[in-house]
Image (spheres, rainbow, N blue to C red):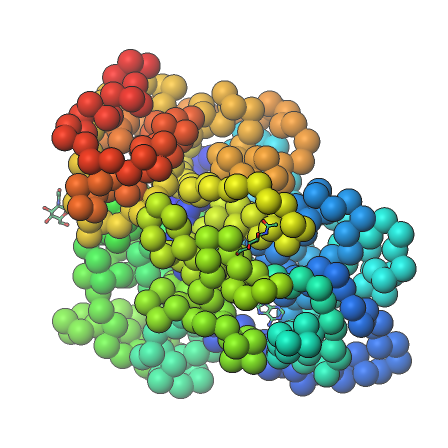
Length: 534
Ligand SMILES: Cc1cc2nc3c(=O)[nH]c(=O)nc-3n(C[C@H](O)[C@H](O)[C@H](O)COP(=O)(O)OP(=O)(O)OC[C@H]3O[C@@H](n4cnc5c(N)ncnc54)[C@H](O)[C@@H]3O)c2cc1C
Ligand SMILES: *[C@@H]1O[C@H](CO)[C@@H](O)[C@H](O)[C@H]1NC(C)=O
Ligand SMILES: CC(=O)N[C@H]1CO[C@H](CO)[C@@H](O)[C@@H]1O
């Protein structure tokens, strides 16, 4: 995800990119939730209270990617199924990756309203998985002969009664279910020093997760002179590049600071992290590395960020992209276990937390039968785990094992795909070869006919075949690391792989992870990817 896109390009879609990341936004979410608790209630209590079904055979808590994928797979396996999604957001299910990428590169001035974006190959699409006509009204769910998927917007589940198989909403309504999925995602973390700094600082801080955050940051970026992004991971790096491009148009100063030495330093080995940092700088971003924030204050109408080593940075607005806190608010009433190491609800390899209750997406700490206990914050994982939970909820007994992947593109000419545990603190072995013009994300998406490299995304949510219209320029630029394979090792076994400018070879990588063998010579293993041959 990271996408650093170079200025002339169209946006591409990376939808899936990467991420581990963390999503963010906790505080503002809490704030908006509490507003909602107050004001939505009043609104709803007025003339026509929405009729809420008292029972739904399938109840999905949360209206994000994992819930949507589950709804689809439930309907695919059980065509008459009645599925109710309850979400505390005011929007129908949508995908988040474009919020930090493509939407910023649109030339349509009304993009904050249309929320449409151009994929890498030029095809336009919406961030919503489906148009409103796909869904049925919640009040029609119980009587709908062929079932359907209904979404209850702006309603929060606040309590679970797992013995009685029912939940309670923030307006007091109760809904009973036969099977329930918890896909509550997470809320962005903030830095304590910002929380402690008081309201003035908080009001100039964005935690980025939702549509409304995109809208508000877009506005901020037009009205201030300097924005500072804190965080060097995918989200921070993507937003830095998105805003950096604006800086060349409007003179906005864009600063990105993080504790690591280089961008994505927690994922990429140092030499690649260094390379990526140079790439981000070329996008117009001022990088301040090895930066630990000591305090933030509001002075003379500006923010002053004091670093532990004494450096002082003045700016107008902060975007904190410092990780995600999985949302486990229902653990207590549901009697559900939260994982003490990774956070999230603990589920088994079938994503089940207790009988009739499944968890998928960012909120699930699941047992990966190959790599052990994990929690994954990626689009592709949300799709795959949501789909698996949905299948299991309908009683499918097909065995299922899938290691989700993610990708990130650094503009049209450089990109990577990753699988397994990619953590720069593990030993890595990289094998590189010289790249040719074919070894670019753009060429890969053109060849495969899709703008989306996630296998799951393609299968699950791609709409119609992609017209091969627009065309973006390619790319003359070559770096030192043309293309290659980076292996991440734990106890001599390969647990993660990054394919750097090597595309369409994910099945090979997946098999290596799955086999879990020790390899004496990784150069030999790298040959399986044919990187020297084409
Ligand atoms: C800006 C951004 C860019 C990203 N880019 C990428 C990328 O390029 N590649 C990649 O792999 N991943 C990316 N991700 C991560 C990816 O979007 C997440 O992994 C994915 O959204 C997780 O899906 P989910 O369904 O688990 O949770 P979410 O999408 O967070 O959905 C959970 C929903 O549940 C709602 N909810 C929570 N509690 C309740 C409750 N009690 N009652 C009702 N509703 C509730 C929440 O408000 C939310 O709408 C990105 C994330 C962000 C924020
Ligand atoms: C990465 O960059 C830092 C300086 O920013 C340098 O000290 C370090 O040697 C570089 N590492 C590699 C492997 O090139
Ligand atoms: C139908 C099906 O696959 N159900 C499985 C769901 O997961 C539980 C265990 O977590 C199994 O016991 C079920 O057989």
